[in-house]
Image 1: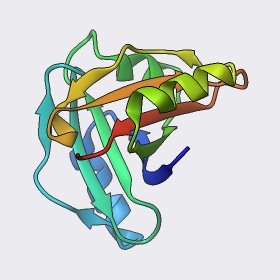
Image 2: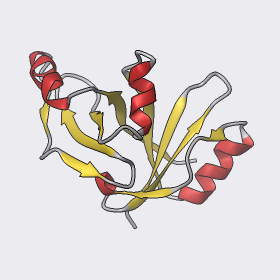
Image 3: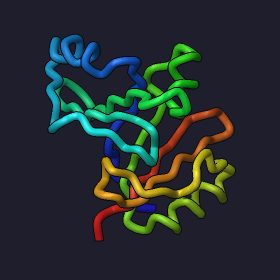
Image 4: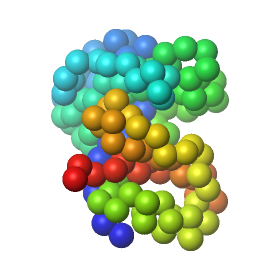
Amino acid sequence: MDLRFHHLGMACREITAELPELAIAGYSPEGPLFEDPIQQVRIQFVSGGGPRLELIEPAGAESPVEGILKRGSKFYHLAYEVDRFDDAIARFRERQHVLVSSPAPAVAFEMRRIVFLASATRTLIELIEARI
């Protein structure tokens, strides 16, 4: 299975409050902050002093990120880009990963599909469909 690390997902109450703190560690925004109504989140990618981060802020009370923040979690998923998206999902499911979300298009990735899967030990993996 061809997995390429893409980012580490970080839940935030307010992205704008996180940016100055991350700047101390050498991080800066890769582009503008944007909203994804499908995923019900606002997103800002940053890079710099470590692995690429996806800062994720809830865009409403029904956002899945609300539950993560309520549990006090911050870093919560590892994301990988995959060439054969459906095959990768099948391989993770064969290894007892459970679908947490159905495959859906994501604004962050030019409407390419993403999916979240969880392992038996609750590691959350995001698969991102590679560009064709």
